[in-house]
Structure formats: C-alpha cells, structure tokens
Image (cartoon, rainbow, N blue to C red; front, side, top):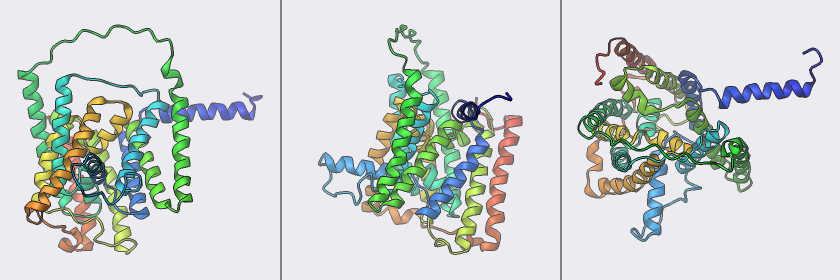
Length: 396
C-alpha cells in the first residue's frame, strides 16, 4: 500500500464509489431526503414538481396527430415542463438500470397486461379529478400546503385498500395458471457486460442536452430535464415508490416506505415554508387542487388503479425505464385517459363542483402551519409503526 500510485488509488476509490452507487440499494430514508431536496430545487428553479401534466401532454399530442382532435397542444413534449421532467425521470431510471446491470425487457401474462390497462385508465381518471397524481395531487400538494393533498392522502389510502382487496379476490378466485419455465437461450453476446458502457454514453448525452438547451436560451427547460434524470436515478437505486407507502401497511404491515415518504415530505414542506413565507415564490403557487371532493374521489380512483397496475405515476416511469412491459401499457393507458377525462370534467360543468384550491396557512395561519403539517406526518409514521408491530390493518 505504501508504494500505491495515485492512479491506482484513484481507480480503487472510483470502483468503491461505483459499487456504492450502482450496485448496492440505497436506503429508502436517504432517498426520501434526496427526493425532498430535488423537489425544492425544482420549486425554486421553475415551479412545483408534477407528473400528470406530462402524461396529459403526451395524450393530447397523440389525439392531435391521429386526427381525433383538432386542437393543437400548446407545447411540444420537449418544451413542456412536466413532460420534460417525466422524460428525464424515465431516462434517469433507464441509465441507472444500465449502469447497475439491471435493465431487461420483462414480459408478463395477458391478465397482468389487462390489469395494467385498467390501472392506467383509473390513474388517469383519478389524476383528472384530483388535479394531479400521487406526486402533483398528494406529494407536491402537501409540500405546497394545499389542503387537497390531505384529502387525496385519505383517498389514496382508501383506494389502496380497495385495490388490494380486488387483488386478493383475484388470487382466491382466479389463480394464475402455472407456466412452463422458459427454454434456456444461449447468448452469443454478453449484454450485461456492456450495459454500464451504454449507460455511461446515455448519461453523458443527457448532460450534453442540458447545454444544448442552454445554447438555445432554454436553460430552465434543460434544467428540468436534468433534475428529472436525477430523480429517476434516485428512485431506481432506492426502489422508491409512493404506492408502497399506501399498499404495504395493508399488505405486509411494513412501515419503511411510509417513513421514507414522510421524511421526504418534511424536507419538502419545511423548505417550502421558508420559500413561501419569505416571498421567494408566491404563497399560492401550487395551490389549485379541488378540496375536498375532487381530491378525495380522485385519490380513491387513483389508489385503486395504482394497486392494479403495480405502480403509481412516478414508479410507472422508472419501472418503464427498467424494462417492465406491463407498466409501458399502463403509461399509455394513463396518457390517453387523462386528457379525455379532463376535457369531460370541463365541458360537463363538473369541474367547479369538485372544489377549489385551499391554502393551509389561510385556514390555521402561518404560525400553526408547520406544527400541523409535521404533526400529521408524525401521526402517519406512528400509525404505520404500530400497525407494523400488531398487523391491525393487514389484510393478508
């Protein structure tokens, strides 16, 4: 070791860092902190983080390009803020999967694809009612102190319980048919070995994309693409999934993801309080969720759908990046459903009846906002921990 050269020492350190980042799974609580920080960066960079709006943009473009609608969407997917963070998230997970040698096209049964379609339809519908998905309607809504986030939080819990009951009924009454193991294939080329190199090329390409956006005076958009990429890496390496926070207490009793999401929200919400209270961003920014009917009903519909699909809006993106074909079907169903339901709610006159954006500080004052916000999250953690010990709400 005394004669170790600088290059060999550096190589050893890089190897250890690579193993820690791309071969070992990250702790959920650490990922939660990173997620909260990234959400705050996006808030300061452009505005509140959302995902459903990106799905909506993709669906609108599909309907326009195939001639179903005449209305041309306002922005292209590569200039739409939420679409860009979605593309970044999916790409970040894809790059992370390659660098960790975990990418692979994963097929499934026809029944699972059907559940993926139904789940995507329900999530697209629920996001339209709630004014956002599990990110925009729940996570960011709470972080922005929109009361609709609490209504959707309850709705997601009810929906997750209902969705799990449907899956349990399926297991009992429609057992899966045993399938023959796939025949062993001889691979002339070892795809796994080259995955990290391909991932590295894609990573450098996306970093270059940021500078290309900057050259065309679109620095803000390039930043959103890059921040989305970082979120995709964080979520993939930690298996961070909002749906697990609502599913696991009823399925296994595990409280780990509830704690991780709550910690993430504490970072996000307290940082947001500093930003809004100090007028660094408008205090009503991100407060538009229909409290309480739309958020609650949307949460129930969305929660049921995410259980059937096996992922929420954000985890659908990073699982697609990892190669899950069921979630690819879910993504398409979500994107095609959401703009249609949004249009229906507006043209039918139901939209204003679902509720309006309600700002927590205007209800309890700024002085009580942070204590109330923290108290609710702490109660959620304590409930999950108690349930983990005693299985009081576990359905299985």
